[in-house]
Length: 117
Image (cartoon, rainbow, N blue to C red):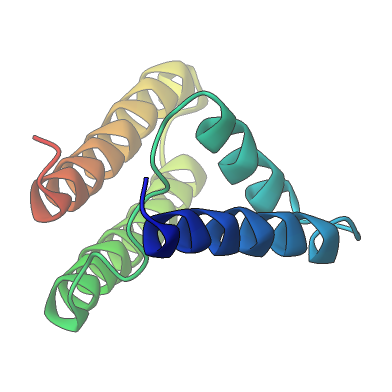
């Protein structure tokens, strides 16, 4: 190893040691999890890997689903108030099924936008 390479390696090791010393304070659960991943040889996830356009589309998908769920809730309550009490179990099952369908569609869209498919 040349003197420059040795100096560079020593500087890098010193920087790591300084970083560890500086990070000995309180850490968030996220920071602690990232450190455990690094100890296992797994790279940190890229920060800002999603473009603003993708984030916007994800927020739009979440907002649309939230609006659909709110509408579903209102309609469900109205049907329960107007309907025959003997139909309540079926109405609850239909409501649950539709709620899960809306959530699944939202989650699928977000996975699609992230590229997780």
